[in-house]
Image (cartoon, rainbow, N blue to C red; front, side, top):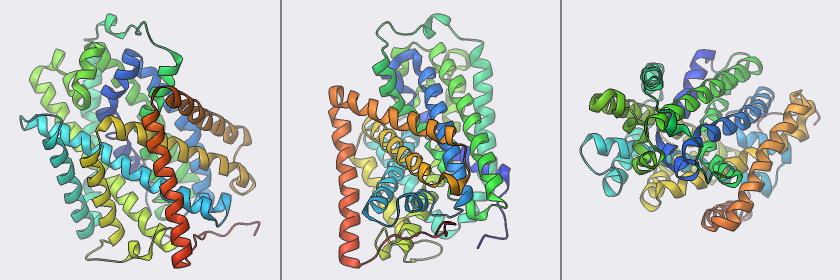
Length: 434
């Protein structure tokens, strides 16, 4: 049953933008620049195109199966009740935890710089962990408290980024935008595993579909509007950053690259303003992803994919699933460098979205999607995954190995849960052909 307080189109778009802008442009410019230099905007463009087609599949699936189970619901509808759908559901949950850790790392870097501390190392991890813990507590006390200011925060960061873009475009040094001589198709494909990570927040909208009026219409509009707007923002900001700073300086700045790029034309004041916007962006993104991931854990426990303890209420609106999710995010923050978890997260999300896109082909009659668009989504997402796997096998085996370890853990966990608890994942929405 849907909430009578229906989520409007503008609120859904604000939620999507809040989750997406902060996960990518603030955290990943330096990481992508290390791979493709000034061609970073091309990587964002390609990742944006892939995301548009993925968004179409998610919109059609969400419209037909309007469940807060989101990806898990789509997996079960497409592949049935088995270890495969359950295992991929757990893998997706892990990927969302990685996403939140990347954004929190970005918050820690900007927070440390504004406090006059090193942008990496212990202080970054401490501040990142602190904001995650604070938001877990806030979500336990009141979900609506933060939601009331979400639109305001989104508006503030969009105004700051728009002002940065307009002023920055006029100060660009064209020579800085020349593509690096060693740019290759392989490097460009590898970078997509990082930049794609910046787009994954749109799936937060799917998690709120039960609160939408006429989700079959509102959801597609919200998802497409969000993706297209964010893609434009990412491309312009990438051009401004690399147009104002040599690629080597962007890479050296790492997580604070966007704020550093404001210095040539706005000075230290511009650096501070953009840094504050980055903090706001990170907070909204962390909160949106934490709420979505915690809610996903609760739903997965209700479905039977995670242990029943994940749906147990603690105090206020908090659940054990939310608490465990927060602890897992903090553990990743403390254990891994940003470059490692960003690449892992992008690759994991690409794989999850590819599996959902492939599954969509099995229920096309149900969703009434255009076959050629659904097939294009599969070709683009799955094709990119295969190419990145080949490249990682040759050049970056660590990322591939870590991804495979998390994937194996997901299926083993699902098999163990099914064997020792007798619980099996089940669909929430009935199919017409059943």
